[in-house]
Image 1 (spheres, rainbow, N blue to C red):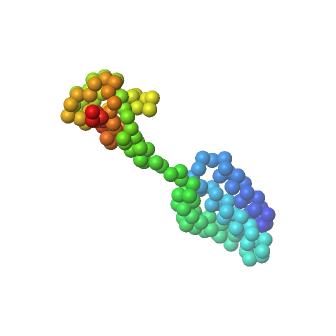
Image 2: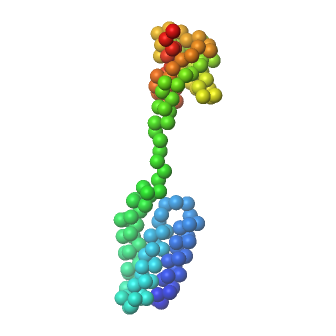
Image 3: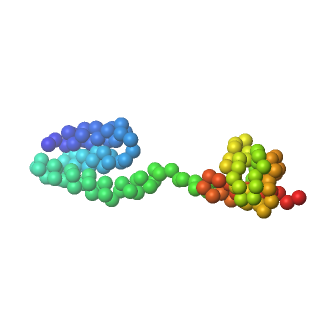
Length: 145
């Protein structure tokens, strides 16, 4: 097979990677075809059977060696502590909440599910501080007067 056909195949496969949602599978076959085309152009690979044997070996080998690293490089960092940043913020209950009971409170302009972590009832409109989060429920305690 002519070297330029391998180059065209490699470019087509690289273009195919752009058309598919991320996964980085087709990319490595495109790189494998480009490598085989380059080696064939240099005269290192003569027989067509050698080229066809080397193509999957290079492609699958590169996939196994580099795909995980490539995915890790493009992975967006996940902030797991975003809700923990609410610790110490002021929340205002919209209703009276008994000790240990669950209710609603406003925090940063949004209604949140809260649990009264205080030993006394919290009154509607009272300033409370967020102690911590348990899932999507905030534990609040009334401010000391």
